[in-house]
Image (cartoon, rainbow, N blue to C red; front, side):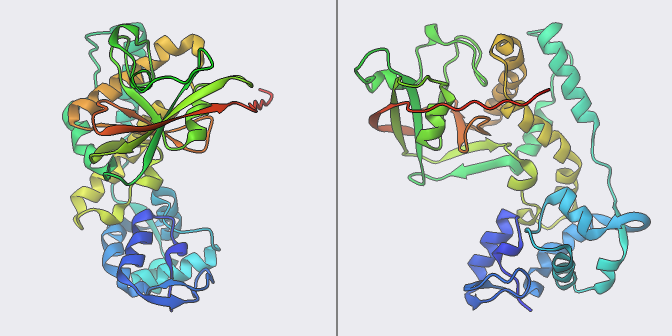
Length: 338
């Protein structure tokens, strides 16, 4: 029996299969054709540490359900196909039939502490909050959500609405001068960061322009590697399979996954403009902490477009390559009753 990258949603498993196998054919699990194949037994050493996070419990849940809810491992095939694959991955039919529970409790206290800190920062203590997150704890979690974007591997885009028929100059398309910097999702007043996007469409969408307006879009190339904090969707972006195969790392990640999801929400949730000065305070604090830990910036999802947004604490690792002018031909707003 063979499986393929399409059998999984886990990004590490997908790339790992492509890296170690050269067999091409039809997948026995998801029926994909002309695709790289691997015998599931070759992934046994990757799954064993994960299985060890759980213990048998008659009142628990099937291992498949736990794997999906905790790690979102398998693709969109049927439950029957998933169980068939899991049987091969664990080399035990009994594992599939029995019920389990996690050996460790996920830490909800960190989420409660963050929410209390959020309230304190906005409404009680701005500069000396008593409930500030532990920097050392955040640093220990950084190895899970840090990602490297290599030099030359992708382009970045920044958009500005034109004030006249002329496009902005190279100097004007960089981060704004300190004296003109207002509150942003990641930056406080007076501290300039560079906000860019993964696509032209996302960059233009983020400035929330109007139909008929002309927009200058700067195209940047990456001239040095970037180490970014990526909290867009921890269950999708953080793979338990690329960690060192020891219980401590997996345990720490499992326990803190809900907290990482909460931080990801903080960085990407839509903000009502009239509340921005207050609502941006927690994400600004979090960004400052991530900068202190050593990250060059943050990736966060766009709430109004399909691409990704990036905030860069330093812009020296990017070089402005070109400036293009666009005209906004359509804007779309959707609404639903409350």
